[in-house]
Image (cartoon, rainbow, N blue to C red; front, side, top):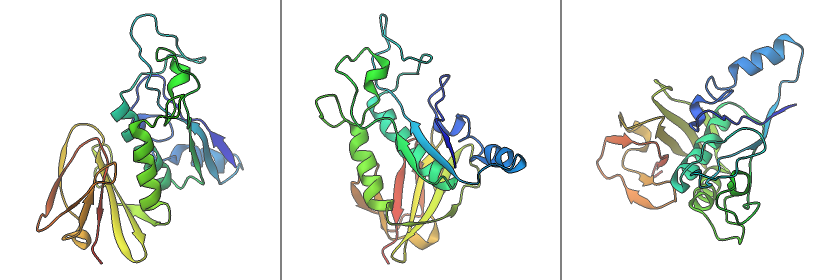
Length: 213
C-alpha cells in the first residue's frame, strides 16, 4: 500500500490539490507502471484554522493557508468524499484535537476540536458525514463537469443518496430524478423537505439529497 499526505501549501481548495485534482489517476498509473502497490491510503491531511495575521507562527513545513472554521468544515467533508470517489482505502484527517492553545500557531490549530476539547464546526460536519455515509455503499462519480461541481452517488439500505457541492462559487443543477420528493440535509445534518423542487443551487458547502424510499 502507498500512503500519502496530500497537503497543498499554495491554496486550500481540495479539488485543486495534488492527487485530488485528477482523482488519483496519475498516482495509480505511476504505481502500476513501476510494479507498485495497487492500494492507496491517506494517512494525514487537514486544514488549519490559525490566525495568520502579522506575527503568526507557521508550521514546520511551509506556510499553510489559514482557513475559516466554515471552510475547514467544508474542505474536510469534500476531502473525504473525493477520497471515497478516488477509491482510497482509508483516510485520516490531521487532527482530532488542536495540539495547543495558541490561536496564532499554524501547527496547533488543525483539530476538529480546540485544545480544551470544545468542538469546532468541522466536528459536527464530519460527525454527520460519518453517520449518513459511513455504512453506505459508494455508487459512482456523477459529475458531468467535475472542475465546476461534484455529484457523488451512494446507496444505503436501498435508499439513494447524493453528496453535492460546487468547487468554487455557485452552480444550478437538476436534482437527480431518483431523489426528487425526498430530503435535503445541510453540512451539519439539518433536514428539510425537497417537496416538488426539481432544481438546486449548489455552493462550496456540500449538501446531501436523500430519497424517501
